[in-house]
Amino acid sequence: MLTCKEVLDSLSDYLDADMKEDIIHEMKRHIGSCSDCRAEFDTLTMTLKLYKHEHGTPKEIPVACHDRLVKVLELEKLRSKGAPPPKMV
Amino acid sequence: MTPESKECEESVTAVTDEELVRRSKEDDERAFGELVSRYESKVYSLALRMVRNPEDAEDVLQDTFLRAYRGIKSFQGASTFSTWIYRITANSALMRLRKKQLPTVSIEDQDERETPINIADWTPGPVEQLMTQELQQEMDAAIGSLPPEFQQVFILRDVEEKSNAEVAEILDLSVAAVKSRLHRARLKVRNRLAGYFSDNAKPNRRAMGAH
Image 1 (tube, each protein chain N blue to C red):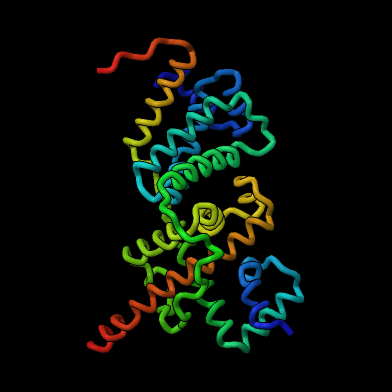
Image 2: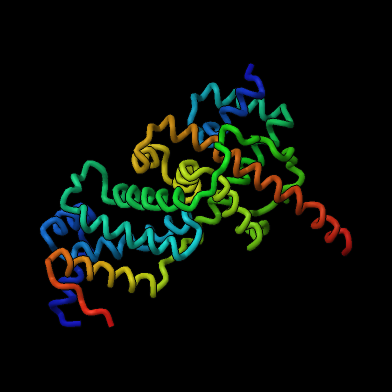
Protein backbone atom coordinates (compact mmCIF):
# COMPACT_ATOMS: atom_id res chain seq x y z
CA MET A 1 0.00 0.00 0.00
CA LEU A 2 1.27 3.46 -0.86
CA THR A 3 1.29 6.10 1.86
CA CYS A 4 -0.09 9.61 1.20
CA LYS A 5 3.47 10.97 1.22
CA GLU A 6 4.57 8.47 -1.41
CA VAL A 7 1.56 9.38 -3.54
CA LEU A 8 2.21 13.12 -3.23
CA ASP A 9 5.90 12.71 -4.03
CA SER A 10 5.01 10.81 -7.21
CA LEU A 11 2.09 12.94 -8.42
CA SER A 12 4.11 14.61 -11.15
CA ASP A 13 5.28 11.31 -12.61
CA TYR A 14 1.75 9.98 -12.31
CA LEU A 15 0.36 12.96 -14.24
CA ASP A 16 2.95 12.33 -16.95
CA ALA A 17 2.22 8.57 -16.86
CA ASP A 18 5.94 8.24 -16.31
CA MET A 19 5.94 5.21 -13.99
CA LYS A 20 5.50 1.46 -14.01
CA GLU A 21 2.05 0.12 -14.81
CA ASP A 22 1.56 -1.56 -11.40
CA ILE A 23 2.46 1.67 -9.55
CA ILE A 24 0.02 3.59 -11.76
CA HIS A 25 -2.71 1.18 -10.63
CA GLU A 26 -1.78 1.61 -6.98
CA MET A 27 -1.73 5.40 -7.35
CA LYS A 28 -5.13 5.29 -9.01
CA ARG A 29 -6.57 3.16 -6.23
CA HIS A 30 -5.15 5.41 -3.49
CA ILE A 31 -6.37 8.63 -5.16
CA GLY A 32 -9.78 7.07 -5.65
CA SER A 33 -10.17 6.37 -1.95
CA CYS A 34 -8.31 9.29 -0.29
CA SER A 35 -10.02 12.68 -0.53
CA ASP A 36 -6.90 14.66 0.46
CA CYS A 37 -4.78 13.07 -2.25
CA ARG A 38 -7.64 13.42 -4.72
CA ALA A 39 -7.80 17.19 -4.03
CA GLU A 40 -4.03 17.36 -4.59
CA PHE A 41 -4.35 15.44 -7.83
CA ASP A 42 -7.36 17.40 -9.13
CA THR A 43 -5.88 20.82 -8.41
CA LEU A 44 -2.52 19.89 -9.91
CA THR A 45 -4.28 18.53 -13.00
CA MET A 46 -6.29 21.76 -13.30
CA THR A 47 -3.14 23.86 -12.88
CA LEU A 48 -1.44 22.10 -15.77
CA LYS A 49 -4.59 22.31 -17.91
CA LEU A 50 -4.65 26.09 -17.38
CA TYR A 51 -1.03 26.47 -18.50
CA LYS A 52 -1.50 24.15 -21.47
CA HIS A 53 -4.54 26.17 -22.49
CA GLU A 54 -2.44 29.31 -22.31
CA HIS A 55 0.00 27.71 -24.75
CA GLY A 56 -2.88 27.50 -27.25
CA THR A 57 -2.49 31.25 -27.74
CA PRO A 58 1.14 31.63 -28.93
CA LYS A 59 2.73 35.02 -28.63
CA GLU A 60 3.63 36.15 -32.14
CA ILE A 61 6.62 38.43 -32.59
CA PRO A 62 5.47 42.05 -33.16
CA VAL A 63 6.33 43.42 -36.63
CA ALA A 64 8.43 46.29 -35.22
CA CYS A 65 10.38 43.80 -33.11
CA HIS A 66 11.03 41.63 -36.19
CA ASP A 67 12.20 44.70 -38.15
CA ARG A 68 14.64 45.70 -35.40
CA LEU A 69 16.01 42.13 -35.26
CA VAL A 70 16.63 42.18 -39.02
CA LYS A 71 18.48 45.52 -38.67
CA VAL A 72 20.61 44.25 -35.77
CA LEU A 73 21.60 41.18 -37.80
CA GLU A 74 22.40 43.28 -40.87
CA LEU A 75 24.69 45.49 -38.78
CA GLU A 76 26.36 42.36 -37.40
CA LYS A 77 26.93 41.04 -40.92
CA LEU A 78 28.57 44.33 -41.93
CA ARG A 79 30.66 44.34 -38.77
CA SER A 80 31.81 40.74 -39.27
CA LYS A 81 32.87 41.57 -42.82
CA GLY A 82 35.00 44.43 -41.53
CA ALA A 83 32.89 47.20 -43.02
CA PRO A 84 32.97 50.51 -41.15
CA PRO A 85 29.93 51.04 -38.95
CA PRO A 86 27.22 53.09 -40.67
CA LYS A 87 26.98 56.73 -39.67
CA MET A 88 24.47 57.31 -36.94
CA VAL A 89 21.74 59.70 -38.09
CA MET B 1 9.28 39.48 -57.21
CA THR B 2 11.16 38.16 -60.26
CA PRO B 3 10.78 34.49 -61.23
CA GLU B 4 14.45 33.94 -60.26
CA SER B 5 14.03 35.38 -56.78
CA LYS B 6 10.83 33.38 -56.30
CA GLU B 7 12.77 30.25 -57.22
CA CYS B 8 15.47 31.15 -54.68
CA GLU B 9 12.82 31.81 -52.04
CA GLU B 10 11.33 28.36 -52.60
CA SER B 11 14.75 26.78 -52.54
CA VAL B 12 15.26 27.86 -48.90
CA THR B 13 11.74 27.44 -47.57
CA ALA B 14 11.54 23.83 -48.74
CA VAL B 15 14.77 22.60 -47.14
CA THR B 16 15.40 21.12 -43.70
CA ASP B 17 16.94 22.99 -40.76
CA GLU B 18 20.05 20.80 -41.10
CA GLU B 19 20.54 21.89 -44.70
CA LEU B 20 20.01 25.55 -43.76
CA VAL B 21 22.63 25.20 -41.01
CA ARG B 22 25.05 23.64 -43.51
CA ARG B 23 24.49 26.49 -45.97
CA SER B 24 24.75 29.12 -43.20
CA LYS B 25 28.17 27.74 -42.29
CA GLU B 26 29.17 28.52 -45.89
CA ASP B 27 28.10 32.17 -45.43
CA ASP B 28 24.78 31.75 -47.22
CA GLU B 29 22.97 34.76 -45.71
CA ARG B 30 19.64 33.72 -47.20
CA ALA B 31 19.82 30.35 -45.42
CA PHE B 32 20.49 32.01 -42.06
CA GLY B 33 17.65 34.46 -42.79
CA GLU B 34 15.32 31.51 -43.29
CA LEU B 35 16.37 30.02 -39.94
CA VAL B 36 15.60 33.39 -38.33
CA SER B 37 12.15 33.54 -39.87
CA ARG B 38 11.43 29.94 -38.85
CA TYR B 39 12.40 30.48 -35.22
CA GLU B 40 11.98 34.19 -34.38
CA SER B 41 8.39 33.84 -33.10
CA LYS B 42 9.25 30.70 -31.12
CA VAL B 43 12.29 32.37 -29.57
CA TYR B 44 10.36 35.57 -28.84
CA SER B 45 7.50 33.62 -27.30
CA LEU B 46 9.81 31.58 -25.04
CA ALA B 47 11.76 34.71 -24.08
CA LEU B 48 8.58 36.61 -23.23
CA ARG B 49 7.35 33.74 -21.06
CA MET B 50 10.66 33.62 -19.24
CA VAL B 51 11.39 37.31 -18.70
CA ARG B 52 7.74 38.47 -18.71
CA ASN B 53 8.14 41.88 -20.28
CA PRO B 54 8.38 42.83 -23.96
CA GLU B 55 11.53 44.98 -23.64
CA ASP B 56 13.60 42.24 -22.00
CA ALA B 57 12.10 39.64 -24.35
CA GLU B 58 13.30 41.68 -27.33
CA ASP B 59 16.79 41.96 -25.80
CA VAL B 60 16.85 38.18 -25.35
CA LEU B 61 15.63 37.70 -28.94
CA GLN B 62 18.37 39.90 -30.40
CA ASP B 63 21.04 38.43 -28.14
CA THR B 64 19.96 34.90 -29.12
CA PHE B 65 20.17 35.44 -32.86
CA LEU B 66 23.41 37.43 -32.61
CA ARG B 67 24.96 34.53 -30.68
CA ALA B 68 23.55 32.05 -33.19
CA TYR B 69 24.92 34.10 -36.10
CA ARG B 70 28.36 34.31 -34.51
CA GLY B 71 28.33 30.69 -33.38
CA ILE B 72 26.78 28.87 -36.34
CA LYS B 73 30.17 27.89 -37.77
CA SER B 74 31.16 26.16 -34.55
CA PHE B 75 27.73 24.51 -34.11
CA GLN B 76 28.55 20.81 -34.33
CA GLY B 77 25.06 19.52 -34.93
CA ALA B 78 25.17 17.14 -31.95
CA SER B 79 21.68 18.44 -31.13
CA THR B 80 19.12 19.82 -33.55
CA PHE B 81 19.16 23.51 -34.47
CA SER B 82 15.86 23.83 -32.62
CA THR B 83 17.37 22.52 -29.34
CA TRP B 84 20.46 24.65 -29.84
CA ILE B 85 18.51 27.90 -30.39
CA TYR B 86 16.24 27.15 -27.40
CA ARG B 87 19.33 26.56 -25.28
CA ILE B 88 20.78 29.95 -26.26
CA THR B 89 17.42 31.58 -25.53
CA ALA B 90 17.07 29.91 -22.14
CA ASN B 91 20.61 30.89 -21.13
CA SER B 92 20.17 34.47 -22.25
CA ALA B 93 16.84 34.75 -20.40
CA LEU B 94 18.37 33.17 -17.28
CA MET B 95 21.20 35.71 -17.24
CA ARG B 96 18.68 38.54 -17.42
CA LEU B 97 16.50 37.06 -14.70
CA ARG B 98 19.49 36.58 -12.42
CA LYS B 99 20.61 40.17 -12.95
CA LYS B 100 17.19 41.48 -12.02
CA GLN B 101 16.33 39.04 -9.28
CA LEU B 102 15.85 40.38 -5.80
CA PRO B 103 17.17 38.19 -3.00
CA THR B 104 14.65 35.42 -2.40
CA VAL B 105 14.42 32.39 -0.19
CA SER B 106 15.47 29.21 -1.95
CA ILE B 107 12.72 26.84 -3.00
CA GLU B 108 13.85 24.41 -0.29
CA ASP B 109 13.10 26.97 2.41
CA GLN B 110 9.72 27.96 1.09
CA ASP B 111 6.63 26.59 2.69
CA GLU B 112 5.20 24.10 0.23
CA ARG B 113 1.76 24.52 1.69
CA GLU B 114 0.93 28.15 2.33
CA THR B 115 -2.76 27.71 1.65
CA PRO B 116 -4.84 24.65 2.40
CA ILE B 117 -5.87 23.08 -0.89
CA ASN B 118 -9.61 23.08 -1.25
CA ILE B 119 -10.84 21.67 -4.53
CA ALA B 120 -14.22 23.36 -4.02
CA ASP B 121 -12.54 26.73 -4.60
CA TRP B 122 -11.58 25.75 -8.15
CA THR B 123 -14.62 26.32 -10.33
CA PRO B 124 -15.28 23.00 -11.96
CA GLY B 125 -15.88 23.23 -15.69
CA PRO B 126 -14.07 24.05 -18.90
CA VAL B 127 -10.77 25.88 -18.69
CA GLU B 128 -12.12 28.51 -21.13
CA GLN B 129 -14.72 29.63 -18.58
CA LEU B 130 -12.15 29.92 -15.83
CA MET B 131 -9.66 31.93 -17.88
CA THR B 132 -9.77 35.66 -17.17
CA GLN B 133 -7.14 38.33 -17.66
CA GLU B 134 -6.73 38.47 -13.90
CA LEU B 135 -6.11 34.73 -13.74
CA GLN B 136 -3.58 34.97 -16.57
CA GLN B 137 -1.72 37.65 -14.63
CA GLU B 138 -1.80 35.44 -11.56
CA MET B 139 -0.47 32.51 -13.62
CA ASP B 140 2.42 34.69 -14.86
CA ALA B 141 3.09 35.90 -11.33
CA ALA B 142 3.07 32.29 -10.09
CA ILE B 143 5.84 31.44 -12.57
CA GLY B 144 7.68 34.61 -11.59
CA SER B 145 7.66 33.60 -7.95
CA LEU B 146 9.80 30.53 -8.74
CA PRO B 147 13.60 30.66 -8.70
CA PRO B 148 14.81 31.20 -12.33
CA GLU B 149 16.14 27.63 -12.74
CA PHE B 150 12.72 26.24 -11.80
CA GLN B 151 10.91 28.72 -14.04
CA GLN B 152 12.88 27.47 -17.04
CA VAL B 153 11.93 23.85 -16.44
CA PHE B 154 8.27 24.65 -15.79
CA ILE B 155 7.90 26.90 -18.87
CA LEU B 156 9.64 24.49 -21.25
CA ARG B 157 7.80 21.44 -19.91
CA ASP B 158 4.30 22.67 -19.01
CA VAL B 159 3.83 25.77 -21.16
CA GLU B 160 5.92 24.93 -24.25
CA GLU B 161 5.02 21.24 -23.80
CA LYS B 162 8.44 19.80 -24.50
CA SER B 163 9.31 16.32 -23.23
CA ASN B 164 11.47 15.72 -20.13
CA ALA B 165 14.25 14.50 -22.44
CA GLU B 166 14.06 17.62 -24.63
CA VAL B 167 14.08 19.92 -21.59
CA ALA B 168 17.09 18.03 -20.22
CA GLU B 169 18.91 18.52 -23.53
CA ILE B 170 18.04 22.21 -23.81
CA LEU B 171 19.08 23.00 -20.23
CA ASP B 172 21.97 20.54 -20.12
CA LEU B 173 20.54 18.74 -17.10
CA SER B 174 19.88 15.09 -16.35
CA VAL B 175 16.29 13.88 -16.87
CA ALA B 176 16.17 13.14 -13.12
CA ALA B 177 17.09 16.76 -12.31
CA VAL B 178 14.40 18.01 -14.72
CA LYS B 179 11.78 15.78 -13.08
CA SER B 180 12.75 16.84 -9.58
CA ARG B 181 12.65 20.56 -10.42
CA LEU B 182 9.42 20.11 -12.37
CA HIS B 183 7.62 18.41 -9.50
CA ARG B 184 8.52 21.13 -7.04
CA ALA B 185 7.78 23.92 -9.50
CA ARG B 186 4.34 22.43 -10.25
CA LEU B 187 3.45 22.21 -6.55
CA LYS B 188 4.62 25.74 -5.93
CA VAL B 189 2.65 27.14 -8.88
CA ARG B 190 -0.43 25.13 -7.89
CA ASN B 191 -0.23 26.42 -4.29
CA ARG B 192 -0.10 29.98 -5.53
CA LEU B 193 -3.14 29.45 -7.78
CA ALA B 194 -4.93 27.68 -4.91
CA GLY B 195 -4.46 30.85 -2.87
CA TYR B 196 -5.87 32.91 -5.73
CA PHE B 197 -8.92 30.67 -6.18
CA SER B 198 -9.49 30.51 -2.44
CA ASP B 199 -9.50 34.33 -2.24
CA ASN B 200 -11.76 34.65 -5.26
CA ALA B 201 -14.17 31.81 -4.64
CA LYS B 202 -16.18 33.47 -1.91
CA PRO B 203 -16.99 36.77 -3.70
CA ASN B 204 -17.93 34.77 -6.81
CA ARG B 205 -20.30 32.61 -4.85
CA ARG B 206 -21.85 35.68 -3.27
CA ALA B 207 -22.26 37.22 -6.70
CA MET B 208 -23.91 34.06 -7.99
CA GLY B 209 -26.21 33.94 -4.95
CA ALA B 210 -27.32 37.51 -5.58
CA HIS B 211 -29.02 36.54 -8.87
